Length: 118
Image 1 (cartoon, rainbow, N blue to C red):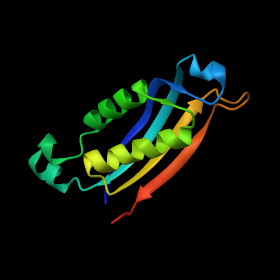
Image 2: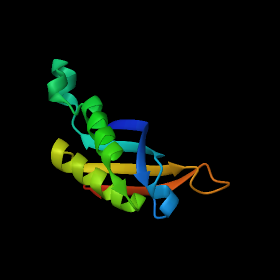
Image 3: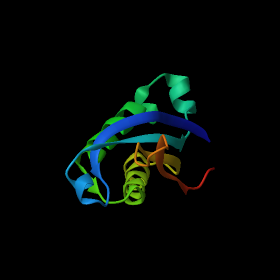
């Protein structure tokens, strides 16, 4: 299995459980690794033969930017569902963080892995 990845995609969104968090937009940052097979794309140099990271990034940026989740856990699950369902990705690892959410920490968040590596 090959991996196509996106690192440090930052999107402004409404996220959090506190009243003040529901009134402001905060930055979330994601790192995403997606299992795929790049051999056909490498052989043909055809973008349609691969998992297009730009298309994935644009879809996730739009989704996250329009969403209003309470928990990063819920957002992470929805991101994983979109990637697996819409982009036919059998395995992924997602790191989703909220920079500055905890005083003294650079960021906090979750890391999830969904699907099976083949």
